[in-house]
Image (cartoon, rainbow, N blue to C red; front, side):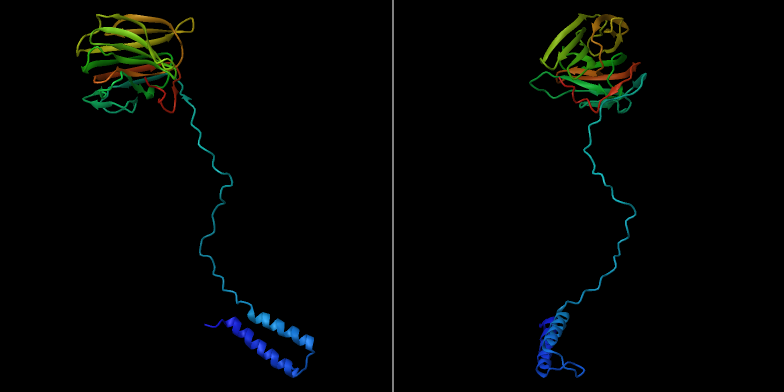
Length: 281
């Protein structure tokens, strides 16, 4: 198909040649040769110019507010927060209270069923952290605990303190052992702090009420009182005073426990980290 603009140019050029030959322009007047040439060029250019397309009105509504000028910044990990004390918690485990950070816990028949962990070639100190308790220095904590099944020489009880450098555990066994342990991440070694054979510990699958109280003394360190079934077989003096996580412990695999009637109280202002992933043994 022939281009319309090109057709106009051809017609205009032909007319210009005829007019030039006659020395005439419309209206019957003669034009000088140079003026006639200028007129031909102008008419040719005007005929060749493309016709602009009509502009359609925009149907989009105008913006209601200006876009932000500042670019978003990367989200920073929140720092641990302090919540003013005192704090008191109770849990009868009739349902999941949301207090616990535990990867092997279920709530059955009004108890927290802890374990068993799969059999492995390593003995690991498992911990069920009371996330709702936060990290504290001074506190009282108690619970009923019952041995379920598995090797009876393996300890279980309380996570007395968990930090990024070490953990402290207070554990009993169905053999009536009563011990306080420290594990340091840097060395990967356990240290037996103190312990006794305590007749107050009920053997076998009987329920034991265990309690721990950590209190700052006059020297600025803390004393740790360990109780079982209402008796205090052991007090450990002058331990470092610093906040840590608390909860339940289970040493090794293939052992399951049942906890009930948990109580916790502190006068401190608990520290709540974003998570407790720093705890592992």
